[in-house]
Amino acid sequence: MQNEFTYAQSKYDTKKMKQLITEMEALPEFQTGLHKQRLLLDKSILHLHEYPDDYETAKVLIDEAILLSIPTFNPNDILFN
Image (cartoon, one colour):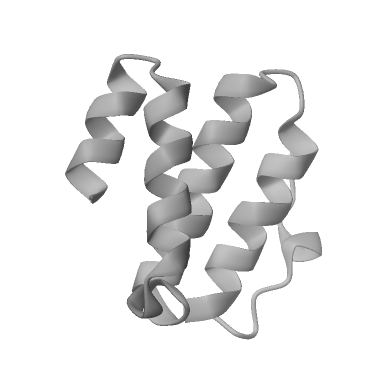
């Protein structure tokens, strides 16, 4: 499914991307851990394809994904110049 999503992303096929996300969300293995982390990343990618100027929503999804593997992550600690 991940390869299919990547392929759909490369073709800007948001319909297929949505379908795959819906399918992944229904599977138990995508409810926790690294699979959930990848699902959140895929959701952020889809969001940016649909709303290219809405980085904030995509950032929230990515921050949530990072927290799954780094529980002490605080996005406010990232400094931008």
